[in-house]
Image (cartoon, rainbow, N blue to C red; front, side, top):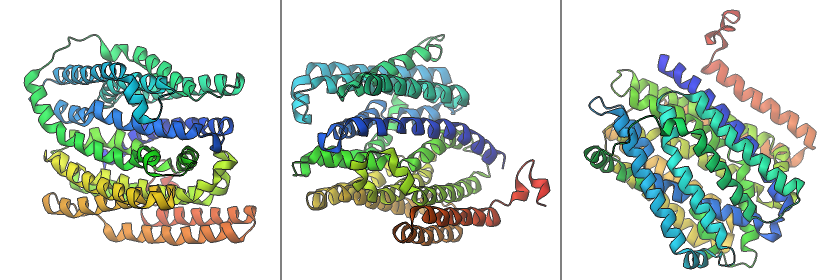
Length: 480
């Protein structure tokens, strides 16, 4: 129970910073979509470029965050040697990447479709290289349980980014999409300065023997990461090549903007991961770990379903986050959110092979899911556009989740409360149907009232079945 309390506390800190940060970042969405109409394709450029950035970040870190957690908790390893070795290896790869991009900037820009704006490519290359390197000191902060500093720096980065974007796009009335990338470079450079303490004050050592062991552990995680991030971004990278309409960037921008509303699930999953990963590896020998995994899975699903219902209940209000000419993409929101929930479940299922050092299984599962996603996109995007992108992600995560569960139960069985989980999934599905009906058949205010009652009812069921108020600190004595 103590570990669950610790998990909840850290998740609250990481989650608060993540949710607040993402919410503040949402301020950029109405700003961008107001200054860049869907027809202009400006937001399509941003959507496309950040898809590449996400993939490159995985390549440059090559699973060394998870590997760092695993090796720093091994009793026979020197934790600072592991830390410095991780920094050197990721830093070297990131620097080599920047050099290669600068050397081949012309052909690279042409292949990506930005021959008239090569600065988009090299600016983002430098930015993502800095971000990849900084992932390691941020992992160090998590490992040291310095959640407050971690959260503060993340929020500072976002706050400065928003301020600079507002100055350029709103105050100066700028419209050049490239400035969004320049601002990112400034913010990443600022973070590097803020993390000087975590990057100095110790002797840098490249422990070659440890690095060989780490690379042996991490290469399947790299494949897992590539497949995993492709599940999230492949549609946005492939779309310009397989969608043949003249409005390609406009359609991509609509899909990217609408998907932002669904990112509440990504926030929750990310916050849970930041807190969960160090706890899992630190307590690998605890006898109650299996029970903790099962409970954590259950509560993760419960609260992501609650978040799903809340987004769906107030979608007609949340849609004002994006410009009106992007509203045609709102139909992807429930599909993308459901896919994000399955991604979170898949992440929770992934620890069995990490704990027994069989990370190759993660590569297999994610590869299967990625293959499904790519197949759906290639077959159906030319005909159905970005709706096929949304369903491709749903299918990919769903397949990876199911396969991972059944194989995991064979090699590392955990008694997940499947009946309880199924109850909440069915209840949420029924409520979603009712919410959608109210949206389409009642005036806005009346639909919002009805939807609010449904969300309250779902929360009441949670409190009655799994989180009775009598179990809460401070207020519990009033409900006994």
